[in-house]
Image 1 (cartoon, one colour):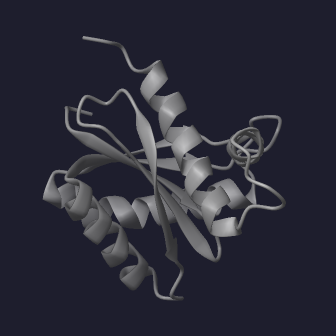
Image 2 (image 1 turned 90 degrees about the vertical axis):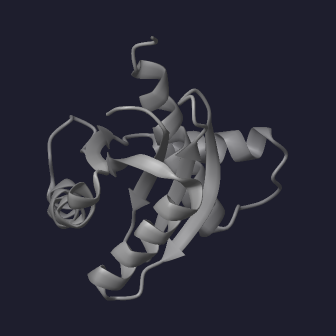
Length: 145
């Protein structure tokens, strides 16, 4: 996965949580969320618009594995969507990979609570924060140059 910004996607049934990295790939920030339209092509066009906006060259998609690490129905659905996303993005020289997203929503909720977010944070905020947690973990695992 070369250089430049990376976008993380937390694929949900109703929303896609989005986060992005700085150009040095050291810090993740929340972008927001994309509401699902019911049309995968339209949803992926919205993802492409975000990639253009933040000038990203790579995408990391959260893979919702089971607690045991097995690939259940949610992970299989995510992998099917990743396959379609790759067909759209890789011809544009944008790489797509997956990363384990277990516990990202829990971590995001804890972080929001620690940051003083009172009550239940909105799902869209949690989705974006979960994408940010996923991306920061992915960035932290990358070798430094």
